[in-house]
Amino acid sequence: MSAAIVLRAGGLSVRTTARSLLVWAALLVVALVLAVWSMTLGSYDVGGDDVVAALLGRAEGPVRKVVVEWRAPRVAAALLFGAALGISGGVFQSLTRNPLGSPDVIGFSTGSYTGVVVAMLLGATSYLGYTTGALIGGILTALTVYLLAYRRGVQGFRLIIVGIATGALLGSLNTWFSTRADVDLALRAAVWGAGSLAAVDWGTLGVAALAILAVLLCAPAAQRRMRRLELGDDAAAMLGIPLERTRAALMVLGVAATAAVTAAAGPIAFVALAAPQVAQRLTGRGASSDLAGAALTGSVLLLGADVIAQHAFAGVTLPTGAVTICIGGVYLLALLIRESRRHTRGGRG
Image 1 (cartoon, rainbow, N blue to C red):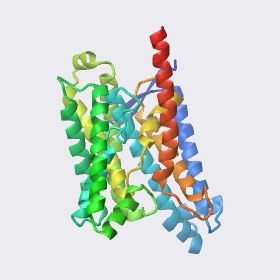
Image 2 (cartoon, helix red, strand yellow):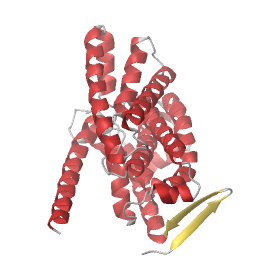
Image 3 (cartoon, rainbow, N blue to C red):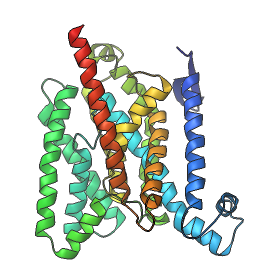
Image 4 (cartoon, rainbow, N blue to C red):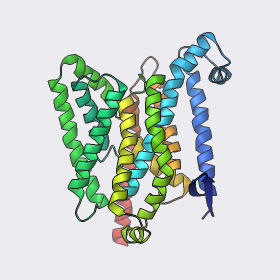
């Protein structure tokens, strides 16, 4: 096992390992290389040196317009939104102590989607209106799931089951809304509901970045509390952690991260599910939470999925959410098979 290292910056500190630092650095390099390469792809040819020059403000004319105004916002959105989804997934998987405990599986993303659909029906057309709807929808869903799952405390498996049922109910409600709305609104909701980064511009990204930056600033403190909760309720209580108040605060943090992404790009599934698990395997942290690794892995996963969505089929651009669902479906199937085999071996043992 790698020796523990404590990183300090002002009043913040993060306890990690040398292996985790190497994995974080490798993921950051992969994300940056993938970002530059993705901005060279498209009908207008630009090279990697042109991309770097444009991002440094040393290019003018068509190259600057294509790179800075057209392609860079989408790439930046993929990196930022992937990080937010990775953190959200890490928070909920730590709270439920279950790899299936991600916001898109337990209904919180669907609740944010419902909030945005309701905002559309009420006449909202701006990102601020969508964000408000997504945040209210997500928090109300989280509160409903929390109260329904509460029995002298919240047990992870019960929270997942209640969340899945609530998500299914809200999914039906969203479908009902689309049948009652006029054609233009239903079409707008359907396009937005597919999950895509195509409509993200610098303005939308700037507002979303403020919300996600607040989540990122809270992440180190959240991770310290999550690791104490992972020791068990009795141990966490002995360390002075107020259990239910801490869980409620972590749920709000995870929902806020999901809502900020959902309001800007629509529901993007499975990144929050896969990123924390992949990060844990890369860093060798076992079941312990690693929000930094989850954020970096989420960035790489979402940017990779968006590159596939744009360029896998010539002349056809897919919604990013459709690609993440396909990749996530394969991952979820593999996860279920692995969990089934582990329980089978445990039963035989």
